[in-house]
Length: 334
Image (cartoon, rainbow, N blue to C red; front, side, top):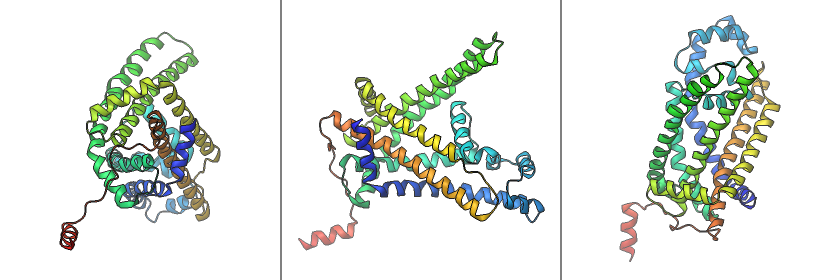
């Protein structure tokens, strides 16, 4: 419980990190938005359907567009609106759905950007004091390739889970177990149980990788495999505290999802209504990103408190390298 509130304190103490992560998210997603806008503009043109779409959702036109769409256009479905987008994302992960190439490329770019930033984020939360933008990016650069190697190992584990474990659970074992069932309710319950089991596997891997990242930064580890092994040992030896902290953060996530479902903004006609919908979606995105940072901050606090040293960081604060000319001036001054 203490690590949970300590995490929120650290997140609140560095609002610039939240705004920076939000800016990166928007910048990475912007090319997709521009591309989608071009597709819609080309398809609508100056037709009457364009005027109807401007006033509200035109489902007849939407179905026509979906039947002809390719690439990123295939993602423009009714499930992108409001709370339905959240459910669609969760369903896509649990069902192991593959993304179209433009979305997959953007996700890879975002993961690379997050891998770079996470080194500086963890370093800032671990030191618990502002170090400036130069030191933040220096820390991000120092840990980037270490965290990238760790991300590649984690990616291989996730790939194995989806390529083999997910396929075996849902395409073989589930089919075999429900073959003789006559009630749809029983089949549904079996599927929910498998969703929970597979989701738990993803959570365990995610937790281990998170603590491996923290050990890379806090303990200045250079080996991805060593950090992953150390993260696994930490989770195993302190399973109760780790699970309790994750449950608290997970409960906040569920509350956020419930609030979003209650608000559930929908696309309606009128500039004001569309502006309100857009702002509500951005507030939800900010809340999601704040919670993402809270996970890292609270886990960092738990790890440091387990070492009996709340401010422990092995490496000195990183400093952005000076240019050769600046080094020459400083040497000449001596």
